[in-house]
Length: 293
Image (tube, rainbow, N blue to C red):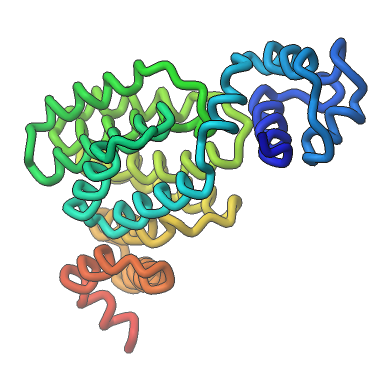
């Protein structure tokens, strides 16, 4: 077991549970020992690890399953591949990749298997290989899978995918209910704050589809503020594109609309998001041209 990774996991879950090192150590060991464990400077005894697991509300098996049986480098490479396909909206490539991994016959940690399956069913929907009801049902099934894994937001990501598909099929009330549940989750995690940005973008998009443009603008601007606060650029371009589209509907000056589309183009270029860049250039060229004059 890699003691550095073990320390990272203990620290991550302590913060998720909103505990200080002193609180975690209380009744188990000295705070200095927790500090050394989190830095990866020492191994705990099995009794200490058992006590820490109980306090963090995790089964002891979690640390053994994830940290012993999981090939960390291979998993990270697999996650990066999925993220790259997803960012480019290359659903055919993502479908082929997830299908290949799921049918490879090699051992996949249950968390990783669920992660790949979630993208597989999303691909089935976007490639129209099954109707949205089937894909939503399968995604809901994945949220019921009991997993104690490293990605504490895995089920949240799956629920986000469900809400998007429902919104795209005009099931607005069901979709909004899921988005609101996600936004009400209490989780002390930078990763969760980043996830909230994506959710706010999706809620803004849903409000736009409902023609509730004032609310759409409010939520989208909240997403932009949170992006700045978190220094997170991943959906900056999409947020600015969405803001430009909302301002069009609200009848704002062309100069203000153009400014937002120009910002969107900048971030699409910066992040290599050619799919979004193409849409922007095809549909909003008049504003891009006006901004370059």
